[in-house]
Length: 379
Image (cartoon, rainbow, N blue to C red; front, side, top):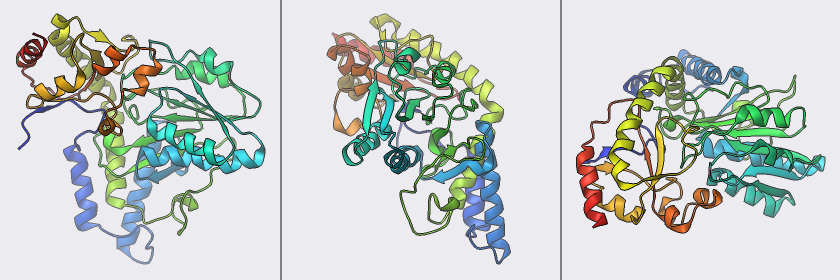
């Protein structure tokens, strides 16, 4: 039985019991295929999918028909970026921009695009604050820039990117703007800006089920972004993402979005209040907080403790708290964080960085014991 307190909410969140109830309903009772329109089971499933589509869309003030369901934000990122590659090739606009601190679910697809589609991918630097200066994007924009990809908030530091200022820089430029909102969807405002063309999200970051996410692809006037499908074999999701729609997961994610919209303010307030507990517990160790702490999500903290290696810290605390040293998707590689390296932080600080992330629910953690373990390790 796991006894450690969970503090890795950037990696995944527990499923809200109210969401579980919805998922079970469509697994056990109304278990129809949304593509089966000849009987009530299929019609009920189809209605559930469309209701969830509207719930997901409402978070960012999009239209339901602009939502395409995927297996998660990684697939949504691929669909947004790799899906634009044929258009880039055909239009002759073969330049893409992305932040150097993007998640690997953005950087790796871009690397694949660069290698196989003769597209110039350029990474925009950020400083130690962890957020991009919009002027750095502006001076790299070219007439042939087909896409710009910026995350909403970083998955390691929690630092929020200046979307409004980026929107102003992009203005009427023809480039499609993709925002990876895996860490912020339903948690942070700003995604309603109509200049954002493409938005990726994941259900399991929002107290919903794993294995489901969505890509919001906004129309410009009457034109959808010119995305090509990555898979073939069915007409689901307007032909953009074939395969049987997982009704229980989609309905659960819709409910998670609905709850997040209603409770967003109270959840943020609770997370901010609990932040003081974390910082107070670490204050005696002269912590170095990574990224601009005035522009950080209320539930995320990246911290380096001088002379303490992150791997050692996680080992000595493993039965007290479950924390990480960065992205869950790359933690098995034990490589230094590309995010902190891109911010220009030194190797010692990068190797000692810990990511602590929590929820709006009370933590109930014995911080005195955590501090004692860390003190013993530093002797």
